[in-house]
Amino acid sequence: MQAGRTGYNLHMSDLASSLSRQLLVALPTLDDPNFSRTVTLICQHDEHGAMGIVVNRASEYSVGELFAQIHIEGGSAELLAQPVLAGGPVHAERGFVLHDGDRQWDSSVRLPGGLALTTSRDVLEAMARGEGPTRALVALGCAGWSAGQLEQEVTENSWIIAPLDEDLLFHLPLEQRWQAAAGLVGVNLMNMTHYSGHA
Image (cartoon, rainbow, N blue to C red; front, side, top):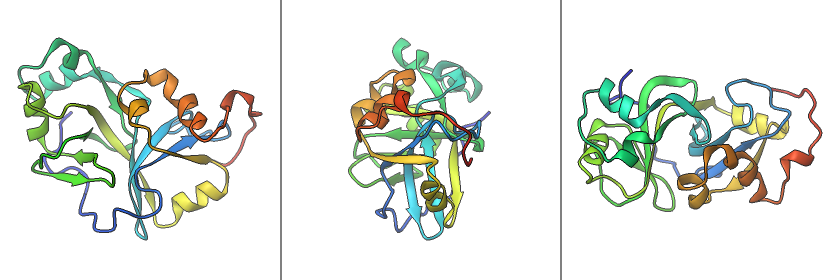
């Protein structure tokens, strides 16, 4: 396991397109085990495809265990106890940090609205020293869609689109995020009939 120094190819010139910085909320009909009952923050969406980070599913690791694996020392008890998210099935061994703040890191891309996605080790080292972003999520892996794939899945009613809520992203317990994200657009997932749909 490693936090990739280069990570996902994050040369994103067209970042401000339609679904960037939106939440994808899996409908109950989505039976792909990688995405069942997930909430994914879309970080890139353009004519070449889309990538995002699943923000409501914990991996088997804590931040402290990740730091031990990649030989980073330090970190507050609160930071070390945080779960590392299972960010998606693509590049599952690589680290992604979704965070606030204006500082630029070695491999960091700014999302519309002020958040950033960083794949370089320096942000983790700064977090361990207490000098990192105020709010951050650490994930292993990401989600990816080829050109047109995400649009097709949306038309097949696999997902609903919700606006990003930073309180949900950084403060709400993981197990509450799926229903809360749907609630941002007035959808109660518990009232929806579950049937087998398109993955």
